[in-house]
Image 1 (cartoon, rainbow over the protein chains, first blue to last red):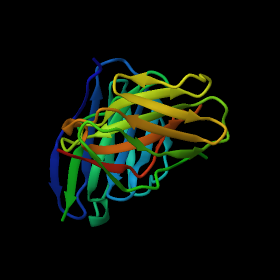
Image 2 (image 1 turned 180 degrees about the vertical axis):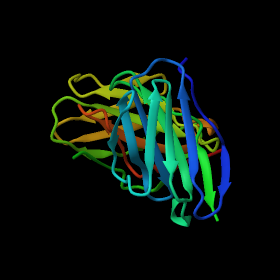
Image 3 (image 1 turned 180 degrees about the horizontal axis):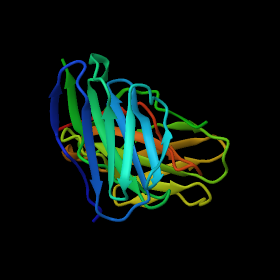
Image 4 (image 1 turned 120 degrees about the vertical axis):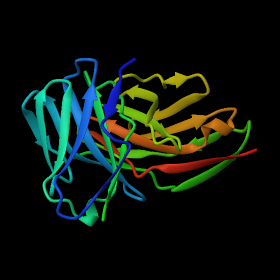
Length: 111
Length: 113
């Protein structure tokens, strides 16, 4: 079974802090994704990466950046956290278009 | 651009009964995948079923089946013999050539004992 892990299940940060959310997959998948999930809005794509050092903006990239230095790791960075970035963050990976297993999610609270 | 619409925010079903969750989508592509994901209270997103657009036969996975109407751009999920463990949020999603996975807003399914 593919395993996608995220560094934290719960995270509390202060406004203005730099925040790193880490995602690791163990199946050599090319594609990795970061989503945020908010009530009534479903999952919205922030960024995705289809190879090492390659990234593309999703639907809501503002306020976020990403890093993919190694194939198995895809990091989401909040340069200066704000309260409107309080959300659930979900990472997924996939080898092709037929599937995309997800990590367990990180509930981020910015105070 | 691709979009997914789940117009019902909530549904309820009696245990052992059948329920159908609706989903419509829009895409300009001819080759794409459609998915239903389940998210229980644990928050882990679980793939329930997937359908390749070029396949006319509706996908089935045990008690879960889809009604895929390509011309109408409709992709509904039928859950037969509903169980208490089926209670969760369900998301419909589409994935095209650029690998982006676009989700609907989800529907909360409750199962009455």
